[in-house]
Image 1 (cartoon, rainbow, N blue to C red):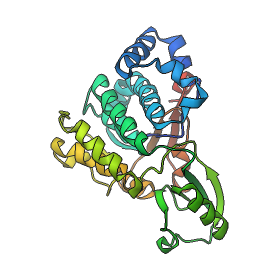
Image 2 (cartoon, helix red, strand yellow):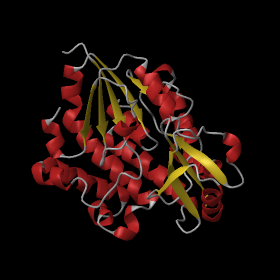
Image 3 (tube, rainbow, N blue to C red):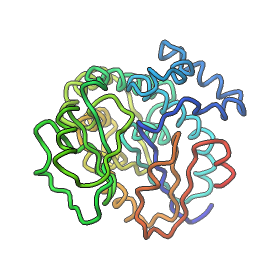
Length: 302
């Protein structure tokens, strides 16, 4: 075993695309079975939904898509990672937190997919791409985040790095904000609801009710939450459901999450998800190794 410390990062919504997972299906027979089992649990053909442009970016579909993909990568690499790193710290961006909990064995695959389905269904209640929008802002270097800029229907959803913040809210209000605040480059995100804002409180309450009887297992690995940087390892498994519910309507403090992880003397970061996104948020002065596991070819690099 290496004496190096690893951090695994799990991507969230916005990373999905129609062909994701096809290379794994073509290489491993058990992956075909994973998709078949998933389709039975979800009540629709997951691969057909994935290839349907009208469904790909709807939260009730994209969340299970991303989780199932990430679960496949996790099951392929988990034993290897445990054998080759002395300590592993986990974090997931929004939905990615569920993938991290799956890696930590808080629930088995079928149980976690049911939870992710409940999350997507609950959040879809306010899902309306014609009413809401989300933008990543690549900030001008001299611009400092001032929360007094936001409000009146516009919310900070993610604080991803010193240079990127994500906003969300009513589409008209967000467009007005863009015009009045030329603070950087605005990039629209492929999502359908105002995630991680107070507009999601009703969804969080519905989700909390749906998963209140889930029996999470206590994890024994560090997992830093998006919500208040709480370490799941240090709280009771009975509090996991509440933590996940709060996460739905709270900003993702990703920049602070990374700073917390960096304090653990991490030597290697590996990102798991359909597309490489989170490694881009690491500090420029990080001198360790960085890898992504997004396709079968990536496994040759680790």
